[in-house]
Image (tube, rainbow, N blue to C red):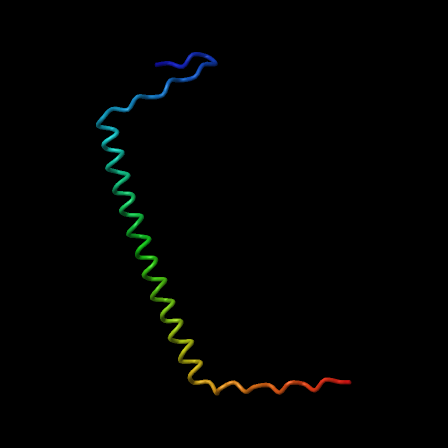
Length: 75
């Protein structure tokens, strides 16, 4: 079909095979995206646990914090 000057082109009709192909591609893309998300989440959790362990080790090795004496109020 050709577009008339100044007119609107009618939408293309997709065939059943095209719809099924698009559906299959969407499913593959969704599965890929979910697996990438899961990989990123596992890496984030692993890094968070590593940093937590390092922080706890650092805190355990450091001397206990001393309490500061409150300053005397001036009258």
